[in-house]
Length: 365
Image (cartoon, rainbow, N blue to C red; front, side, top):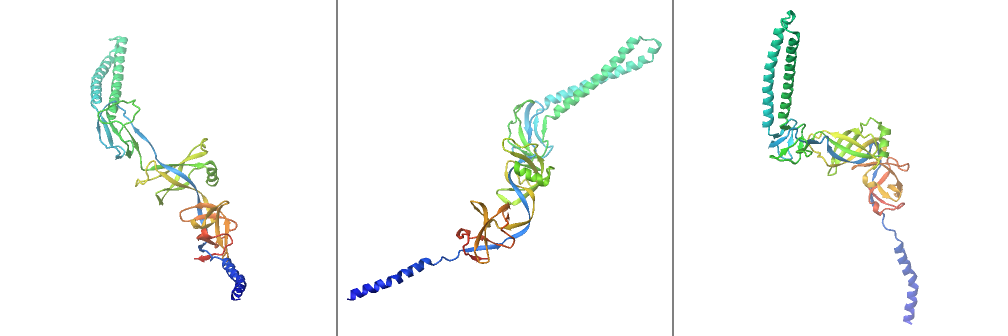
């Protein structure tokens, strides 16, 4: 009897037991905690991104202008030199001998010229009285002219010899940094040798080159014209907080048919030699100023299947996803545009991983 009673009691309690379990399953999880901020509005510059490379404004190949034996190097490999510094010296003795010979020849021919001019002067007074044949007098005049031409030729030879002697000392045509040596002391140099002794690269000022796709190039042209003085900011990847501001001074005259891009160049003073030839830089070319742009932190913008979007929080604390257009992006902020987003809206900047559209959220300022 007791066993039957217990069974009936258990059957009566089963609905209540299942109801309790069902209610536990129906309990909603707590609202996810999110961090928010207000969307700001201000005028900001819009940039177009590019990758640039630092190059020297000139590449100077140091080659000999006089043939001979390289007898001395006044610098070390990799040295920093100033314009006019002596770099190398070629054996000057053969050229000094040619100069001395030309100077001696000039003195000899100047003496002949002086004698020829005196002969002309002496016979000029008597030729009118027929004391000398006119043909002889003309010969004397011709001799003087020939002597005068020879003196001029000697002076030209002296100039050539002096130039060749000066070429024995190779000087830096501009300030910069020397590369490694291709030719060392003791080697014989030839004027027509295609191999340079070394390469000199100026470091200050220094250039940067970068390319823009045709579409972006046309956007900037539409805003800033064809003058080509476009402002840009460049940063080194390892030092993004130290920007270099510059202005382009060169735009190529055609679009590259292979890449669909156009080449631009800018210049920095680089007095502290921070930039080095060959380094890559992130370049931001100024497109235009955007008035009343909406500003959010970079962490607020997410990427979905339909493009960039953000989560805003309405008055009922519900999360709403809204697609946006990114105008520009920096380390500090992202400028966006959307007809559904306004200044002062509350945007989620942290905790979006637990958020879904329409879900209640626990806002942490």
